[in-house]
Image 1 (tube, rainbow, N blue to C red):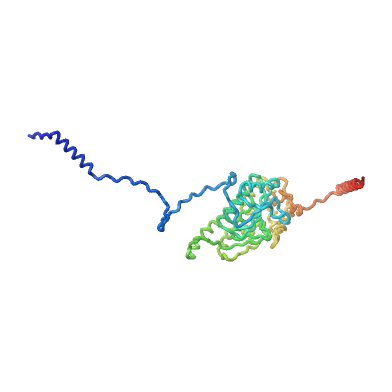
Image 2: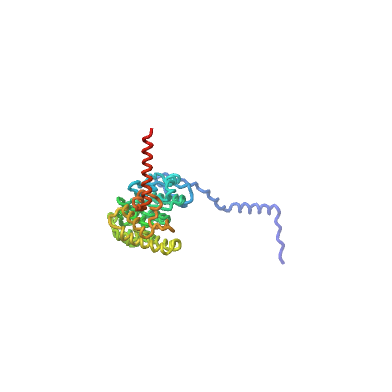
Length: 388
């Protein structure tokens, strides 16, 4: 039989409860959350700074907008002409600013004739890339379909050359390396991008050098260069240029220059019609202009390479030969004049073109009529000058 528990007096129960509460409050409490520290830049000797990660801006499309980002030509000069006769007309008006309104104003006179010649002398760099992108963008807006890049460059940055070349390849350029000009090193990549290449000046290649390389052995340097040459080969292939050009570059020391012969320029796809563009054009022209047009065009190209291209022939002579030869094949074509070979000369009635084109013979009856009219006009002028 269990005995009843003695009851605790009320005051004792209250005292026990107070002791229990005091004991709980004496237990250790968790530390408060630390406040976030303010980030400051150390200026003392023991600073430990990490540069902020820069967000790469989205490329601005100059083909659609007008608020173009700032860009400038460095180590180069540019001029705009609506004329192909550089011997008589010169290089045109200097283009000193790459701002939207300046480029638009420079190309405005060329809108009527439908042709622009961009003369560039200098290094291949970011400024040159911006130049060709912006001139092409305005030419597209003004529907200036015939574009000639008249270039004189000893080279520059590989990455900028590839970017500029892709812009050129997408916008339809004929590229000139005229007598007195040259195209060396990275400029060869620009040459490869043209739809048509007309070359009189020297074209040379050599090995690429990486100025930012940290290599300490030939094996390390070769590994770095192989990555660069891989991009170069991909670029050459998509532009119809033999990748053997890149392999040849590897064997030429950077301090030297290997000049390509006229035969090599043709063999490697750096002169005349761009092979990759030619394949694309053939498919389009077959549908647009017909099989006969394509056949005559192919025959002209073969004979132009055989008859007109000769060592040390000046560009002016090369153009004159082509203009005379194309008439034998029925060009400019009545149905597809803009797609005819050397149609840039049909876009502008230049002194160069007039000098190259034959003067049609005038029928005898018509000539006698003109002579009679001239005599009557002379007599009238004589009579009016002798009258009081």
